[in-house]
Amino acid sequence: MARTLQVHSIALTKEQLLLGSAWFGRISEKAQEQVRLDLVESYLATNQSLGRHGEQQHYWFGVMEGLLKWSITAVDGRTVTLGGQSVGSWFGEGTLLRGLPRASDIVALRPSRVAKLPFDTFDWLRRTEPAFADFLLQQINERLHWFMGNMAAHRLLDSEHLVKRALWGLIHPLLNPMGLKNLLISQEELANLATVSRQRCNAALIKLKRERALDLEYGAIRILNLGALQEDMF
Image 1 (cartoon, one colour):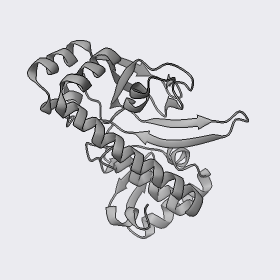
Image 2: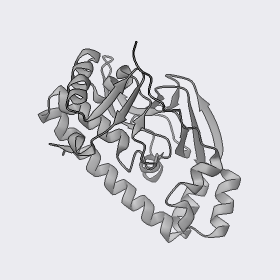
Image 3: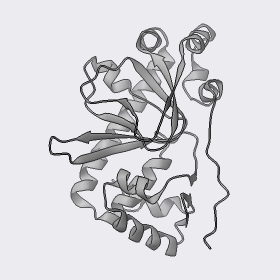
């Protein structure tokens, strides 16, 4: 019988999400109170969309519970996954700053809760709170570097390294600011993020387990060796 890892789904309140966010403690008390007043919460079922390609986006998003992915779907139905968003991460600033409809889909890979900050509040923070604007600049720069690496990875790396990159993405400080090492994620979800078949994903995970880079159990992965995931990483 397979062992079950003693890890539990993390579920944050709006206040816990804010207090754990690097940018929130750096803005003024007036701004903090405004954020508290304006922040709303949404629940997403598995495979439910938070935003679709071509839709106008009206919020900045923070993940309170669950796991979401960014993806682009071609006319013929093929899908490219751009990345995942873990609990504690904030995203969507690029679309808001461009002022154009979404260029990708955001979909929940499991039941998820998302905090939503209205655009007007987001834009007010950006214009009046230097610390918030600095946070956005750093986050956009990190995201650009990550996506550039993704482009190279999907051209140059094999399936094993794509799985390693997907795992690293889930514990990257940008996407996983809480520093979680125990990941509640199925092999199917990870294969989706890595854009490889479930069989290739399984083979890569078994190899990484043999190398003691991770502990693999049903529905959960515990990262044991961060360095092993970063090898040959762009």
